[in-house]
Image 1: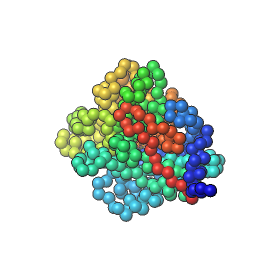
Image 2: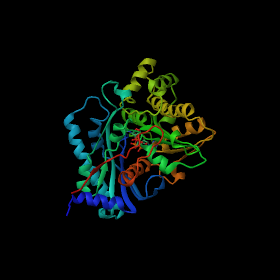
Image 3: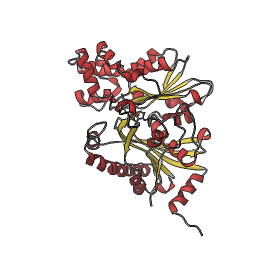
Image 4: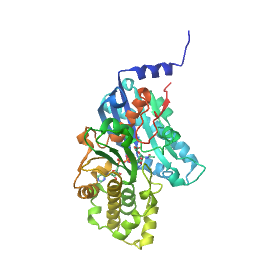
Length: 397
Ligand SMILES: Nc1ncnc2c1ncn2[C@@H]1O[C@H](COP(=O)(O)OP(=O)(O)OP(=O)(O)O)[C@@H](O)[C@H]1O
Ligand SMILES: CC(=O)N[C@H]1[C@@H]2OC[C@@H](O2)[C@@H](O)[C@@H]1O[C@H](C)C(=O)O
């Protein structure tokens, strides 16, 4: 009798289950913590029935953030540190999953799969590295084998490489989930995620997948957070309290908005490799605004995020009365949200709660959904994005 690896038998059994339970993990560019979403899935593709069973963000200790910051978005970094972190993060994320499951009173044996994004440490689309002989590239660490062995749960990880191999920039992957969960016939919708970087998916009212647009649009919270860390020793500008104490410096704002990224055709991606404090300091030097008050700097950076989003939507998504649904930590940035509401008086703007999606959980849900597709889906053609199933399988035993 033909015998084969037990892991493959287990994989086959999970893929055939009518309803699957999956854990989605997202550790974003803000480095605030690990988002953990426990979801149930029946079916796949546009027929997916999905439920968010539990969600938690487990904050990272400062010591861990400091260790990741040593290599995060840096052109020059310590190769040993990257190697150590790759194993460490995989194992650490496994521990955090076990902690979350224990907190929910859920036995790990009842979970069919983990879908893990890992931690992006460098994102290098060709538009950034500009080296003709090299492809688009991106690197997420926190190896899936460590998660699988730590938790005993089948783990699917490293989703972005297939996207690049098939012609994409490795991001944003949000569209694969947004199309399945967020579209509504008869409504033009924009699903805007304001994380470290801001990205959006435009879902047209006629449901035409060819017209769907998903792209990064510019900085989200990354510059605001970096300035808060440097000048106020705070992780972020809670409820925009600092921004509201300052004024926008119009010269600096104009200089910040002056970069070829904003003129490039979508879809396009970016990251803190470009939008860093170095970018801001160069703009300050050009405009002689190095000595403005720190409150004015945070206020101007908040306006930069808001205006970059406004400009993108007004130039590229010219539809009447769109419904704009915001997710990510930036949905709580009062200053940015107030500007968007003022800029789009003909649109309805709310967070994604109205879609039945917890705004903080959206990206973790996305990865659980991509995991479900990796197990039992079909490649879907959306806009000019690669029609591929993404993710690599790691077995516990
Ligand atoms: N109450 C609040 N007021 C203002 N900003 C907030 C608030 N709560 C969260 N944020 C912002 O949201 C950020 C975290 O957002 P989120 O978790 O969506 O980022 P991420 O998932 O790491 O990013 P990305 O999607 O780019 O990978 C914080 O760093 C902070 O800037
Ligand atoms: C390389 C990378 O990690 N990109 C992230 C980042 O955070 C927001 C934006 O930049 C987006 O392009 C992407 O994440 C989301 C989950 C995505 O792929 O849709």
